Structure formats: C-alpha cells, structure tokens
Image (cartoon, rainbow, N blue to C red; front, side):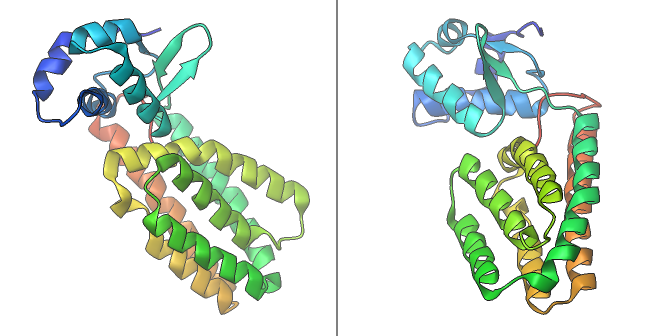
Length: 235
C-alpha cells in the first residue's frame, strides 16, 4: 500500500481556479494521478481529503465518484478509495491479447455481416460522438467492436474477445481522462466499418491492426513520460 503524499502541497499547487469545491477536488486529484504524484495503490481517505481541501466530505465523495468513472481509482471493500494500479507491462499485455484475438474475429465475421449489423455499428459511432460519460463510452466502444465481430461463428472465441474488451474498459476511460475525446480514434472506427461494408477483409484488418498499434504506442508513450512510473492507470 502506497503512503499518501503531502495533500496540502497538492492543494496549494492548484489554486482557486474552479467554480465548485467538487471540481477543485476532482481536478487536483486527477492531475496528481495522471502525473504520477499519486501512485497506484495510494489510499484516498475522505476525511483526510476533506481536511486538506478545507471542505465537507460531500464534495470529496462526489469527486471520488467522478474519478472512479474515469478509471482513476477503485473502491476496495474495507479500504475505500484507492488509486488504480495499471502498469505499462499490463497495458502492453492487454494489447498483445487484443491483437491476437480481434483480427481473427473480424476476418471470420466480415463475410457474414448483414445490413442490421452495419446499421448498429454506425449508430454506435454516432452515440460515441456525443456521449460525455467516460463509463458509457467504454460500453459503446466494446459494443461497436463486438457488433463487427458478431458473425464470426465461433462462440468461444467471441466470448474470450468480449471478456478482454471488458477488461480494456478502464484503459479507455483513463485515456479519455488523460487526453480527451479528440484521441478516441473515431476515424479508425468509421474506416473499419466502411471496409467491412465493402467486404474488403484485408483493408478492414489493416485498419484494425493500425488502430490497436496506435493505441498501444500511445500508452507506452504515456508511461515513458511519467519518468518510467509503472503504475497509476491508463485507458
């Protein structure tokens, strides 16, 4: 378990630039987690935070809920809020698994996809374009990919792929917290859908592999930029 750093110093660095107490607490903790000042495994006790920020526990509680939605912390039974532990090695491993499973699903699925699946995938892209909730974004992203893989005809392969995507959700939410919606790779989603609709399997696979390789490289760069820190979370 990590020891919590000087909260007073973290608070002093942010100043009073936020409109509400909740925004102040959320922004301060989010920046500290993304920068590595709050390492993975660090406990965030509500009473300590309320004292450091000079606020009641209510805005602290709401800020912690928002950080949980961004996959920046977990609520652990009997411990409370703890900064999420996700390592660079775990991120690379996750993407290696996705790279092995998802092209296999897509290659088998594309010849059998129908207009209903294409329409559903297009609708999910539109929903992701306007969805503000990071938790909901993860669900929509998973559903988009699984719609395109759904006609693969191999239930065990699909179940394993969906399970991997569900585990990937926290990486995506962390990614959105660190970089914003502009890095969601929606153009890759649109290109993948267009290739599938044209039954162009080589192009669809090329787009998917590039999509995964770019995301994996982004995560590696993020961890490298934190001075080699190996935990703290990513999308």
